[in-house]
Amino acid sequence: MLRQRIDVKNYPLEELEIWMTKLGEPRYRARQLFQAIYAQGKTDFFSISTFPKTLRQRLSEMAVISNLTPKETITSQDGTVKFLFSLSDGKCIESVLIPHDGYFTLCISTQVGCAQGCRFCLTGKMGFKRHLTTAEIVNQVVYAKRHLPRSWPLRNIVLMGMGEPLHNYENTLKAIKILLHPLGLGFSHRRVTISTVGLVPQMLKMAQAVNVSWAISLHAPDDETRNLIVPANRRYPLKEILNALKMMPLPPRKRFTIEYVLLKDINSRLEHAQKLAQVLRGIPVKINLIPLNPHPGSNFLPPASEEILVFQQTLQKAGYTVTIRQSKGADIGAACGQLDGRPEGGENG
Ligand code: SAH
Ligand code: SF4
Image 1 (spheres, rainbow, N blue to C red):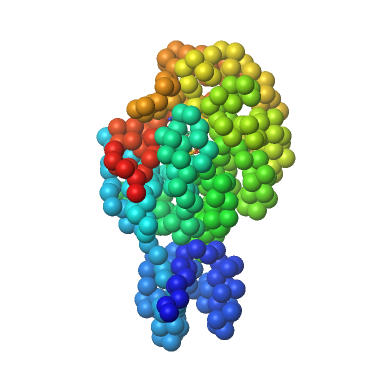
Image 2 (image 1 turned 45 degrees about the vertical axis):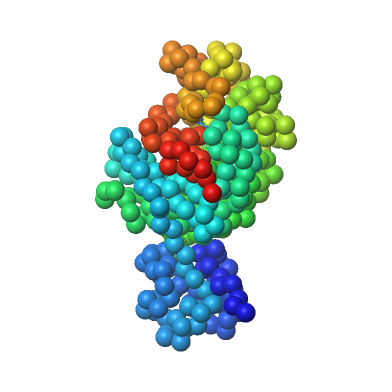
């Protein structure tokens, strides 16, 4: 019977080192392999020139170097690119490549669908299908890095695509280790951001395990409002999330990003802004306001632009740095909360 071949992209360097040692090979072979697959983008063992022929043969019999290629690439009028990847079981995920002035940000998925069910989010509507493997998370970055539409660097990775990264804790952690390792994908820890709905125990654990940037999807200044839109708030209420932020290590000059989707008549009034200013007091944060990206079948609407400005100014007057996210790629269903694994319609496998 054929044994399942292992996918070497599922493992951070330290695990590949253990694996190589178990195979009776010197430990440094793992480093050579890691470099070959990430720095050089190799996808077959035979082309790894630092390996002896016997090792290339042996590894190719027992392992694979996986890859993702999009089944569709859609470019928005504003230059945002959506990659639609079909996985080995036919399920689909998306990554979104966002151009800035001279560099790119890539927004990647960590699950097919999402179990958290936030009321305003299209991915939440899909429900949870499955976790992505480490390789599937990492391969979104590997692909984008090699297929940038222009010669700007890929500078930022945000885990803000489909899924809740901390619900897929183990695979997300391994993927981040590969993203950050200098012999791996080599991203700066300042430029890899986990966005979470606020799964408190996993936030605390992850913050101890790796040094990354954090974005917290708060969306409300009190439990009453948050319970209406974020079901996870019943498990981890606001106070617990804010306490977690106070305990999480933060390098000097670094701040947490507070994400706040603005929903007309729900969380966008003056008193919400005032209360938000109050509850965040003493925590090093910057606030990112995200006017809702509407999608068909949703009852929510974004507030009028005057209301958004009043919200922003109220927080600014209270001393906070507040940006308004200009959602890009809305015309191709690539903006926040518009990801459901479909090009612009149709069923996800
Ligand atoms: N699950 C994680 C990361 C993916 S969602 C999280 O919730 O943080 C990434 C961001 O998009 C979150 O802040 C989320 O609240 C926001 N979002 C979801 N649906 C949206 C919508 N329809 N319009 C604008 N932002 C949305
Ligand atoms: Fe999941 Fe994030 Fe969407 Fe909530 S906002 S349903 S946590 S993807």
